[in-house]
Length: 381
Image 1 (cartoon, rainbow, N blue to C red):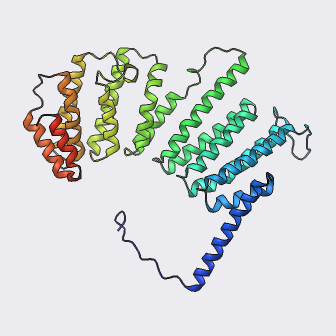
Image 2: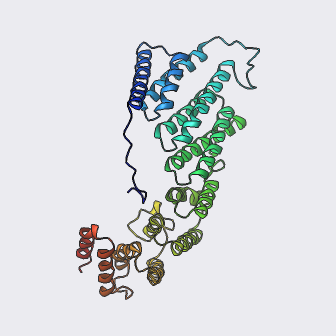
């Protein structure tokens, strides 16, 4: 049984099936040997590139072959750059591009197109994403800023489309951050070239606001999107800095985020990704958290107590309808030491309650009895 689906025993292979499989293995190994021989002989031409295409189409996890492919492409790029500039009537360069840059653009686009079917079939293969990033980095290196930026913007559209199919693909989210950073940098370079100024234009070309809005959209589409919540918290320091948010604005922002996550938790308190984000917000109440990492660094001790009071009331309220939810008990027990440190004389938490919460954790998650025992000891229970 796997994920609730019964496993089906593999059928006995016939002799014909075995022979076919052996032929496929031999053909694959022959392809590997052929590629390795070409690379060893430093034959970095179209034939070698095509051989790597054939091999990677069968096995995109073979990262060494991706390295070989990049060596071939680097050789071709360098050859184009060093070749005399001659225009081909049938392949006239686009405005603003030299013949070499035009050819490099075509090569990059062809390779990006080659990767697309692989990306659809293997959306969580690191090496496919890595190679796309490398290709676009070559565009930034060899092409004019405007041309390179166009390719990165097209990639942004592709990533958005991929995430619409699989909104929780962390490879896609990580890659999206890389694409955004490159577009922002190229936009700054583009402005500097146009204005011939070197002033800081980072905030003007920042995509932080739009990316933050994108996380909101993706979260509302699917609350259980760990990657969207994670990206959201990564954006917050830059977002608040770019907004030049004062203490009141930061506190309002924190209030809004608490409201967002509490609404989500009431919707599905069993979703671990939501508790991850709630825990992040709670760390903002700790004086131990570095100032530059806090959403609202100017909170007073009384502010913190009020936040803790509110959150504990809400968590206890959730328990009334979901007494079998491990995450609520874990949150209550986890936040208690910090709460007591800030307000040692508070009467919201009793020893009886703490013991009851830990008893529930023992029952709901017996595999972590050692952890619950350590918590009891740390809380002197």
